[in-house]
Amino acid sequence: MTAFESYARTKVMTSSPVQLRTMLLQRAVVESRQLAEEIGQHNGEGIMRTGGRLRSLLLELMPSESSTVDPSLVSHLRSTGVYLYRTVTDACGSRDLEAADQVVKFLEFELETWQQVVARIDSGASGSIGDHGTNLAG
Image 1 (cartoon, rainbow, N blue to C red):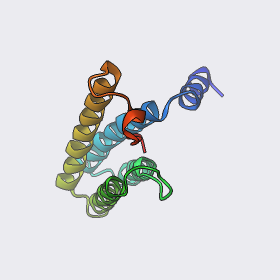
Image 2 (image 1 turned 90 degrees about the vertical axis):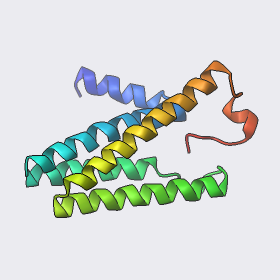
Image 3 (image 1 turned 180 degrees about the vertical axis):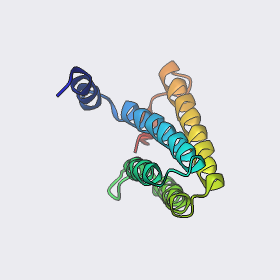
């Protein structure tokens, strides 16, 4: 294991759920941009490889069935995740740059929104996650 791999593993193992979700969203944005680039270059092998990594990240971002979060929020997050997963699959299969760009924009918006929520929580402007009984990290 290289020093970077060791560092990355330690960072993941010691991160809070909020930090893990942030890292997953950041990586999903990077992968979605890469997918759009691969589609634009008509690189079939790259499309399949990048699309697979992105779909794995999207699955990780979906809340689990046993989540203690508000059921309506879980349902909304899961349906959003399924939509993104299907859109990535369609973009890969049909080499649809427009669909890939939609995924990029959606994930960038979700990351930005998540970072704003975390910043508000960290600043104490809206109380802590635990005060409201909802774990936003899933």
